[in-house]
Amino acid sequence: MASSGSASVGADEAWIQGTLARLGHSRFRAGFSLSAKDRAYARAKGKDTINRHAHEMLAKRVGPAHPFKDGKQTPYRGHPVFTAQHATATCCRGCIERWHHIPRGRALTDAEVDALARLVMAWIERDLVNHPA
Image (cartoon, rainbow, N blue to C red; front, side, top):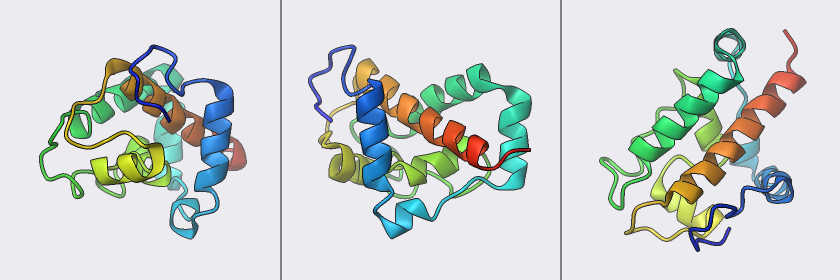
């Protein structure tokens, strides 16, 4: 993912699908799935609310140049976005740098937060399709 800051940075469907496929080759990343409780929560709240949560959590937890407790700030469970962040390597600045090529030490742009949130949402939506209610 380029980090130029333009509004379309990596947020297109081809980038999302390619990134999900690449993440799928990692045994660690591919091992995540939502719990039944998180699936029920996501379905009850709806896509718009979960998308808002994704944007808020990414901006607050990994958006700053030097996030508080970087590398330990994202729980593994408790909200669908948390699980999706680990599955999509958007859980800390180290993973974001390694997988998405956005350097540490500077705040994420709004376009980068949006692109990463779209990736998180695509992963959540895929999990919900793969595990129907």
